[in-house]
Length: 137
Image (cartoon, rainbow, N blue to C red):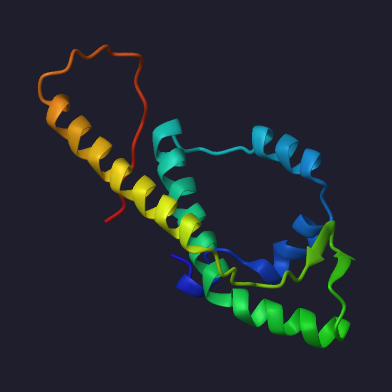
């Protein structure tokens, strides 16, 4: 079995992936070959998606720092098939009227959720189809 750090080898595959367009990646995804049955493949891909999403969360701040160092204050650059943009995070100070309306909407949304929860127990249900759900342990 491969070492945990080698499950996805970005050093070998990262450059090849970056050179592909979105359309080419879609075609590649449709034509990927696996000896696994479709359920097992789906489970494996789900875990890979989790691994990639989590890794992206972990390095996002470092990627921002790298961008700022590499492009020295530029707000937008094209790189590896992406337009990478640094966006300002701002806080807007709304008037009391807006804050009051927002509070009212939150209160009404909570009331709606509670009403739906009560009615779920007795409401008529119609099966519209089936969907596969995975819960990772």
